[in-house]
Image (cartoon, rainbow, N blue to C red; front, side, top):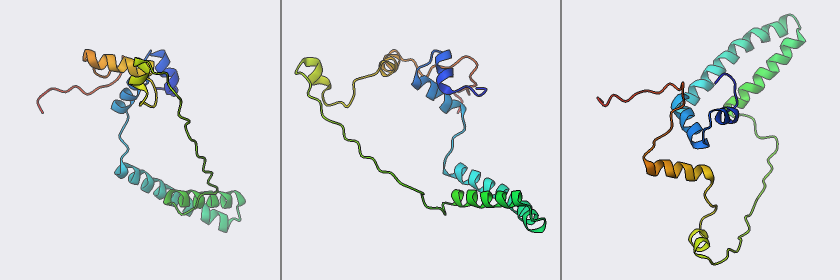
Length: 149
């Protein structure tokens, strides 16, 4: 996507949010717990290598910049390992006020729903009724199902 924000890209390609999300889900790698664990382990390994190099430099040459970098590396390791506790936690509670709806057929039909349908949801429902699947974007790499497996 060459650094474009998804909102800009979505508007340029005239996609709905659901179409954009479906395309991203098909294109981007899945990040499950195993992948997350590997990423953290790789980052910790890299940080350990940097720590060893800059720790020696900080002690042997009295390099203050190397010393500051060592502190930042230690802080980052602690963050990745979950050793630091949160600095501050603000809890905000928001309550939705119930609105009274006039008793028309339409209002009675939808009064139990939290929100009315958005244009994009309606478009997705119509596409679903028509039998359209996720819209493929021009230039998107998609694996074809050969039907053999």
